[in-house]
Amino acid sequence: MDINNFDFKGKKVLIRVDFNVPMDKNRQVTDDTRLRGAVPTLKHVLNVGGAVILMSHLDRPLKKLLEDGTIDRNKYTLRNVVKPLSDLLGVEVKFCDETVGEMAQKMSKDLKQGEVLLLENTRFYAGEEKGDEALAKSMAALGDFYINDAFGAAHRAHSSTTVVAHYFDKDHKCFGYLMKAELDHAKKLTDNPERPFVAVTGGAKVSDKILILEKLLGEVDHLIIGGGMAYTFIKAQGGSVGNSLVEEDRINTALELLEKAKKLGVKIHLPVDSIVADAFDNAANTQMLKSDQIPSGWMGLDIGSEAIKEFVEVIKGAKTILWNGPMGVFEMPNFAQGTHAIAQAIADRTKKGAFSLIGGGDSAAAVNQMGLGDDVSFVSTGGGAMLELLEGKELPGVAAVMS
Image (cartoon, rainbow, N blue to C red; front, side, top):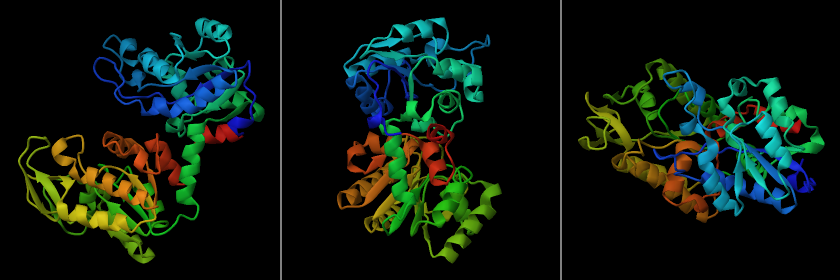
């Protein structure tokens, strides 16, 4: 199952990567983290004499059809990834306008040793997200080996991530370096982590994080909660949160989690103060107030200076750190201070020997935005997949390669 034990010389290697990368309005890649993450696996296959056939999805084009009911192929094509990927690999990447079909078969068959072919967006096919067997079989026919290196999509039982693996026996399928690194680093959190273990969670909604919060309460020593989700907890405790984001139907859930933490001896840290605004706008009027004393018409959009001070102190004592979710609306510069302070604190603590895992999504974006990606132990490429893995769920894309 180890990629280093396979002989790819003269073989066609079908690799599922995650090239679901952000692009600007001109369809230029704005963050190549996921492209760079795939490079070690691709270079290994090329260096040992294999030919590489790449599959990936990009966004959800079938959910965003044009008015005439067709796919916006110009917007969601993977063709825009060809140049940056070619530059990273130092190899001219060929492109196929389809994922399966006669053209894909011919281009794959004609591919020579040391060459790379990128297939079109797998999600241009309705069967992809349904895990269609016929589609997966057509994909499998393109290669002699299958490598899954798309951790960001490993929690999806799609044709290209899971079903395709069933058409290869255990001697012809494995994980790529990125996938293995993701799984190995997650184990450091789940298998006897060094203590104190501090988890920092944020983001908008409690409902998105209930399972991970419940799981973490049984694992961590400290749980820091910031972002929009904090106000549901503060309101549950009787605080006034004004127009801050609150999930009324999760008030009881918040109380149950607070009670569970108390029983387990886990310290939950909520922001004592917040930067509040009179509108959801970077140019809005702002002030700093106690998080449980926010008047009507104002909303908390970032943690305040006292909260930053407390959270940073907790992080300073950690030996294991998990961070998933921003502390505020960090896309707006005026509400990014808390998220940036947490990122810096985690990087500083990592330099002093702590193990830190950044759980994908907005947290990964914040760390990379600040140029701190190399100053933490590991930045996950898959927010949803990492959360499900840490929740204890089996990832279909992982299980299919291991079976």
